[in-house]
Amino acid sequence: MTDFNRPTYHYLPAKNWMNDPNGVIQWKGRYHLFYQYNPHGANHANMHWGHAVSDDMAHWEELPIAISPTPDAPDRGGIFSGCIVDDEGTPRAFYTGVNEDYSIQTQCIATGSNDLVTWETYADNPLIPAPPVEMGQTRDFRDPFVWRADDGWYMVVGSRIEGVGGAILLYRSDNLTDWIYLNPIYIGEAARTGIMFECPNFFKLDDKWVLLISSHIGHTTGTVLYFVGDFVDHKFIPQVEGVLDSGYHYASLSHEDEKGRRILWAWLREGRTVDQDIKAGWSGIQAIPRILSLDSQNRLLMTPVPEVEILRGQHHHFSAQSLTDKQLSVSGLSLDISATFAINDSADIYGMRVACSPDGKHGVTIVYDRRIETLQVQRVYAQSDAEHDDYIQGLPHHLEGDEQLELRILLDGSAIEVIANHRTSVTSRYYPAQSDHHHVQVINPTVIASLDIWEMQSIWD
Image 1 (cartoon, rainbow, N blue to C red):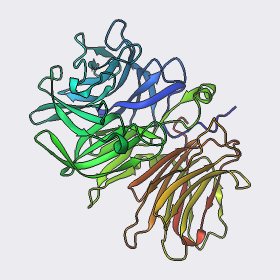
Image 2 (image 1 turned 90 degrees about the vertical axis):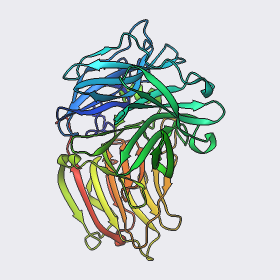
Image 3 (image 1 turned 90 degrees about the horizontal axis):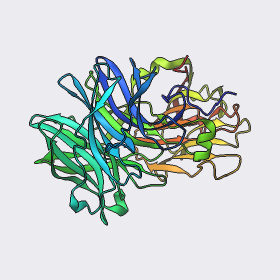
Image 4 (image 1 turned 180 degrees about the horizontal axis):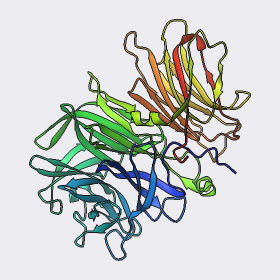
């Protein structure tokens, strides 16, 4: 039986559990994606680094497991998240090694083969055995992100200060194995920015520095925050902050490719119970990569990589004049939708509905309410149950002056990525009950400026 909830153009391994992207790098022209992987089931346990490779960030080949836990070593309990750097032609992977109950988290290194397929862990791991004592705790210290600067190598690690909130710690090295702690570059407030920071990314974009944090705050297990500012004397001075995504998009990891593009990757979590994941035999997918940039207000902008467009199949174009009914002639659960709405006084509600049942009673509503300037994703099942999330997701979304509403919607089985005007992102998960729950509707056809829908091809064909 076909699993119509399983995505077909987002990457996921053939089976079992996948979460955070790790060590994404373009190496000798090919894109390598490493990720948290449980080879023994569709639940979070037995963390290894899985591995896939692509020539175009659209089609992927799953490769053998890259890094596995080593008995009696600091990573014996699991290979947690990290990154890969190019050390003058030698690939070096940084990751967090944990013990059996995750109570000890240390920073480790491994060296890869020339094709990145096999990896050898460093005999003298860990590089950094514990967070600074002023953190007041030793359990939460993970996800190293490393970059080269003119005066050496730097690393940020996610952590928290007991009783205060999340913290991002800065280290420096001349040789990638001997690291000196410098200071926190950012300390949050538990009530506002979360009690723990994971998966930090710190990089320069134009003439500013950007800090990405996966924070333990929000409706589910976390929310990705971003901060834009200056980096002076090893101190980060944030000037602009925002929510990168308010939904299931988590554990973001960025890298710069050979074209000089800063590309963002992320894990899309499930919105169902672990029992449902195990029954399906898979859990977790990778988001479609996005190119990051800054606008004139130093807000973070996100655009799906144009490479995904090679998967576009049949094209359907609509205008306000051609839309005579809310329900469209095109349908499916693998679609790329680009919609522009003319904002005016004739309407307050704008948006689309996807994955709708034939009677229109169940499905996903992606709606912008101009009265409260909010973008929401609303999910309606035939009946609420404890197996599927159905809470309303949303973020503020302010339109400037005569700016139109632009929605990019990537629908793929149970995955829904929504980006409004390149700067507001709400990623969702919805599990249609039947394969014919695939209809598409426009909420208010009269305010459509243009609507383009492409039927997407499977990356496995």
